[in-house]
Length: 128
Image 1: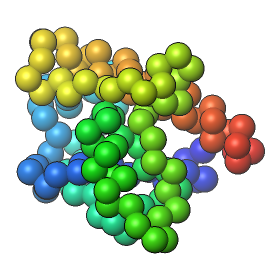
Image 2: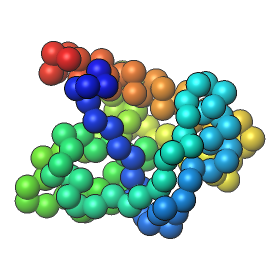
Image 3: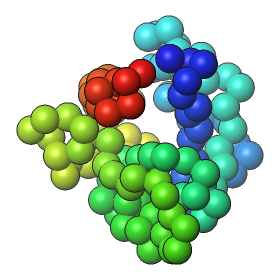
């Protein structure tokens, strides 16, 4: 699906703009075969809500910020990642930054579950 789907990542705040991912996230991702070395944080902009078909938030606080940014011309479907997982709708993916030692692994579990469900929805909805 790489030739049919473009994926980007951005945060609702610009605190870490230009920075590489947290070393703990990079380590947890590498253990699962994901290479985050080239990633740099950027802040989401209102143009993203016009450019992308889906803008996915990890938690309700960030989803609310996205809804507040949305204006005329917004075409993106705004949702929580876990909204795509049956039985997990409305649930947040927790921020592992200040959490337990295995928090990044737990977040990866949730992100993998959510993205698999989102991809299944895309396949069904768009015939991808």
